[in-house]
Amino acid sequence: MEIETTFVCAFCFQVNDTLVDVSAGRRQEYTEDCHVCCRPNFLHVTIDPSLEEASVEATPA
Image (tube, rainbow, N blue to C red; front, side, top):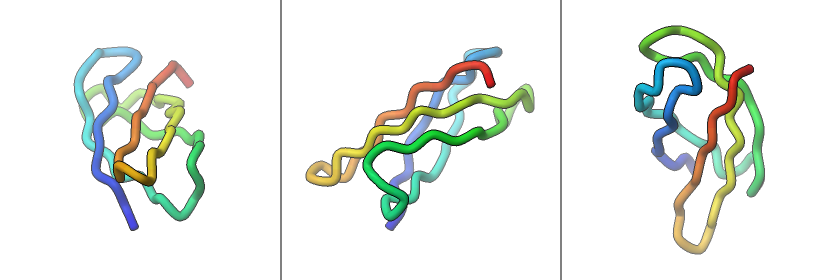
């Protein structure tokens, strides 16, 4: 199952859509490029399975 969520680019502060794979665990970290400025963001993901929501914090990679 995937959850659609957003993150704010750590460089240009634009909102980006992303999909989080719930089967990868409740806490995840991975790098995803900004859809606007193309710079890499290191994403810290926390999933709440009871609410089927994910919170994402982006930091410079």
